[in-house]
Length: 243
Image (cartoon, rainbow, N blue to C red; front, side, top):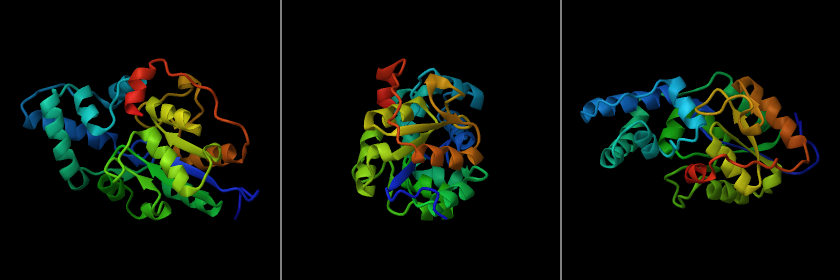
């Protein structure tokens, strides 16, 4: 069933953690475990506290920044990140949010090209998404991609691979840095408030509150012919590092 029918190709590109995968509990768990293992005894924030940190502009992506944000010194943040890349996919469980499969299926049926741009590794993304990776094919940029680059540059390159003009795409994310990446590329942005760091109405962004609302929100935006809304970060220098 085609829900977009003017013959123009359109794309929905997703961040993964906090958008497709319910992975925040697992990421906080590895922080607690590494803190204990390294004898740091840092107080790892709760999920609510971490979300508040992100909403204030604290950079937590890629994962080394996450460790630093919760109190790991530089050398141990790097060591923890090395362990994260090696062990996270099999020691810690991240699962898709309920309803994500139906959202991706509806978008695919509407002839929307689907892609991923994530600051996580391909192993962690694919192990969490499992069979849902079938919706993305080769359209996945992760931090261990052969052409690793900041999120905005990765989003721009992915859209070029898809042969989709930026104004014909929507990037879906859960952090202010994701919105900044979309703005830099000239792509529209849809935020989710159930993820790691956006609340309803934050920064004047369009948001949805549940995964079930994603398909309708994306299809409505993809049908529209408007250009991305102007958006200026309150702390553009901090968010640019995360983008």
